[in-house]
Image (cartoon, rainbow, N blue to C red):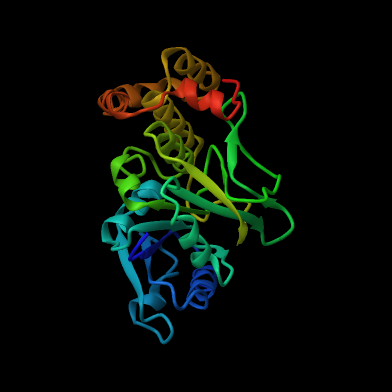
Length: 295
């Protein structure tokens, strides 16, 4: 691949200045010879965590700050992509640290035309030896980490949202992150699933390990209604009728299911479903077989 440029996009919501600086310091000290830009999307934080970027503080002059009105995890990522110039988009949480060679290794990975998306191994800051190498679904479409370290670049079903990189043309072709998602939940699973259905290929890079701060709670309000809505929107957008019925059965026991279903039915999800089914090159049967998911 010629003229590779990485756009590192970091959505931020009430992260605390310490976490944002930790993430940026890690990235700014890495790969000085790799052509890249860093974009921070402050999604209407109320804790002042990005204020230090407003004044071009020494050391952060090249970080691009974008303000958004509270778009949610998916929307903030999409906005960052709109402001970016790179042909590889790297979406990262604002509470991670990266190794010095991370973008150099990603650059080698993306030199292979078959590679459309890559994630590193993601370890816990509390226990760096606890590392996940991509993700998959179980028989209830619950996301599960893959704990086995591969010995080479390897295809995986789902890329974790803490650090995921895509070719821009692939990202644009699938429409980015779902524009109807609420606040937080399932956005990384949805875009991974969608990438595969549209004929793109996703990999985990085991030779890069990013450390992630796993927190007991979000620093902003996230409800189960938000999470269940996004799950159902994913299902309605991509699953066949039999699997869609299974998804309904999974959620119907939860409080508020009727209201969530009503909101979904009144949304644009059915037009989106029709568009996706007309353009994708693989179906959910293929995906479930390929990754051994019994759903």
